[in-house]
Image 1: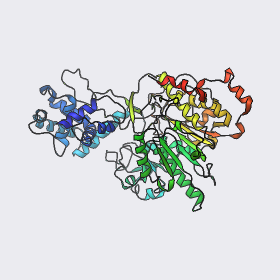
Image 2: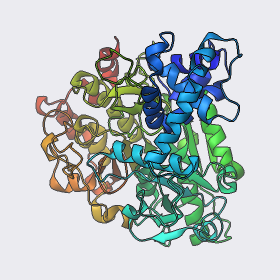
Image 3: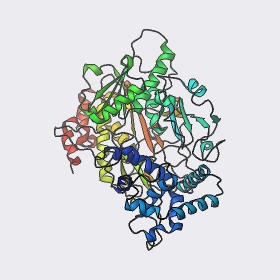
Image 4: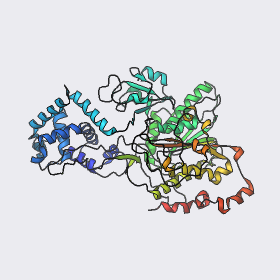
Length: 591
């Protein structure tokens, strides 16, 4: 019986960071197997609509005061749908409480199936999943497919189309992956439909419910599940490889905020693809990628990801475990040949769409509860966001960079008011990270990205960077739209100047969503250099922002006149733009 109590406790527990699955596996207080708890919650969430109906019609909760709505739903699931039945001794009071109503529950389950016109339990399962999908989507046409990136280190797009996706029907529009539009769909999201993305090379999309984790290609690291938006930074940095000699030549690359490793392995895949196409079997020096994360624990995940993708061979990727990017010395001889840097630092995560967070269950109404159904002790309308969104300063004079992951998340309600003070703290960190990258002596390109929709973390950071001393001294500017890779040039959503210009307005109810306070001082050309993704639109992504910076020697300034100018009041934008005063800037991070 501890399985059901553990599952109920896990659903009701407040989030302390990390995904629901991660929190269950890290909970040392469980008496049951974490895998069993996760499996029970996952399966019950697929049937909750019909189980709620069955329990209410059988009037179980009126005569069983010991059963909470959540326990009743979990127990009824196993009673009706588990091959082994209720996982508890026959003498246990809670098992006896649910089994006293076994006949009525089974009868109501049959009635629920007949009402939906389903001839079998599998057909009922498909019908329930369609009901839930329709309810979750509401009035919006938003579609969040399962994005799949082909890993060129182990395979190729053509090989995957001929093997893993051989039986999939090619569709020309992303919306054709929506439930109900795929041929042969069985209601479990297993429609054999496939969309080849038009913006990012070697990126595919399949219907949202398709599970590829059991496929041989996934186990071998030939395909990697990675959202489309998070593929933008590496592609924007490295490009299509259309040039005979790539801009980075034989230079090295850095991923400064790397865990869990999707962007690092994407860089490696693009690098391998381009070098193979351009150089063939020549003996030119191979570029290297330095990938790092400040957390030793997350560094282990990074190392596993790099190894699984085949990026650890031949010195292609060097993982600097536990390395804080802000603590790197740009003048270190190891980085003398670094030409490009990819930066995806801590952010609010306001653009991330919750897909694998705490399941929200439709629970049966207990008599006398006023006709309202609870949701597993949790308010609805949750979304995922990145962990560590309030970085702490290090004891030393400079802050440490707390990197983010795409799997470790914390919770934040969608409707919560924007915390400008918190966003300002985050933007300060983001500014310091990018500013640090611009100091690498051989660097000529940098990409900066967040999974946030807030201007303070995006365009405002870009404006600060372009106005900073290091950018003006070394000639850094935004990578113009016409200089971007083909797929990025064709992306329609660009930077915004104010929150009212948020670009959503597509029927998802967020047309007036706040994106941060104030306006930014950027030229139209600089705004056009910024790329945005908006959650809830027809592109099938979450909220995301990315911009590239390029070093233009013709814009570089220096000498005594420039030093004097830096000290003038009108150009002194605050001590945060100067290394000498980083300590003062970071005093605001303490609680």
